[in-house]
Image (cartoon, rainbow, N blue to C red; front, side, top):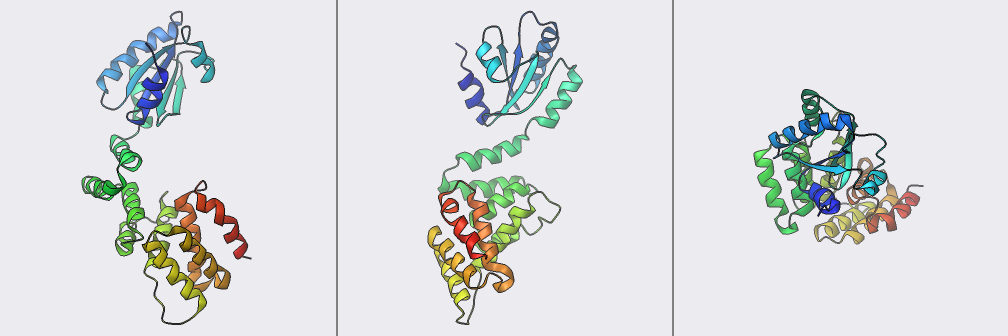
Length: 259
């Protein structure tokens, strides 16, 4: 029995799934179908093919807004990430797949990030990076994992991610937090004291105390040490993401501290 949720949505979290929406009366479908099946067999380690007869499953055709067939949609991690309509000769299909099917090594990294046990994730990232030393995404992921306990190594990992790189902003967050984690001050300024408290809280994974102390430092002097309080807060919010409970609770308070 056909199960779209299991065969497409759930399966696409492991391997990309190409869905061919077709119908028996469709002439171009009869042209494209055998080509898809041949290439699917040739590239079976990279993606899987699922064929959906729109006559038998009109609810799926409606859900995915199929207005003409053949319509081919690429599912990855449960979502449509690319598509095309109409028949393609084999060489054009192979070209399209080469451009849009995720790199297998990238999928391996994504699996580590999404499914690895937190206790083993660092080791798995190190093993992946040993096999793929040029993967900047892996260097960034490992740096994020290490920045609060091994800030020097974290900063080294992202050292070569420069301004023109798409990961530059994320790398800057790591560099900022690495600087915070290595911050030392012998003076008694309140700003310095708050940052040191934030550093210690991050070491012990007390994230709420850390952001509270960083906001306190920002309130006293947001420009201290080349904007370190302000930049540290922004870096944490970026890494946590908008939906993180601490971002929701403290982002507005931080914004108010800037003025």
